[in-house]
Length: 140
Length: 113
Image (cartoon, rainbow over all chains, first blue to last red):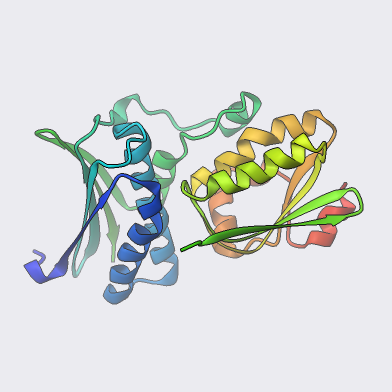
């Protein structure tokens, strides 16, 4: 079990202006745990995509809503939870994007969830009361 | 703090955008505005040089997705060059290398027009 000292939190508003700060927060802690450069860059991207999806979909681009990022680790894994109080995500209804079709239709987006799944070892979506949680795990 | 910048160059009838820094959902609108401006000026032969691009998220790729079809339909292309391995890996994960003209070197992209 992770001790309390191994858990770090960051709370920000649901604005894309915080993206770099959120990425740097998880990257700094992942570096302290001793993850490789490749793993760190994958975690940065996964967290970016999850945070961006919360802003766009859970909060529909409202920029002043709460988002909490929690990061912890134990000898076997590093985990990151991102929590919001917006509209929940239904992973069962998600389909992997057909990029060619989207280009033809001049659509964009829909790639974040797919990337998160590719980049992390485990991804879970939980609903706790009014709160949504995406929990992402990277094995050490 | 500004963590993404774009500079524009012209090589004969080809417009080159040098992008540097971090391209994410916050900074993607800058790239979008630059591409829109080129299309408005009827500059359809576009190279985006990524030599100094340190990071890209899917919101950045989304900008390329939104304009490539229009530009190709008008006889041009958006060619991407000089990506570092981490940036290329994101394009690769999403299958972009089969859909976009991506080159190691800007000169190759110029010759491709």
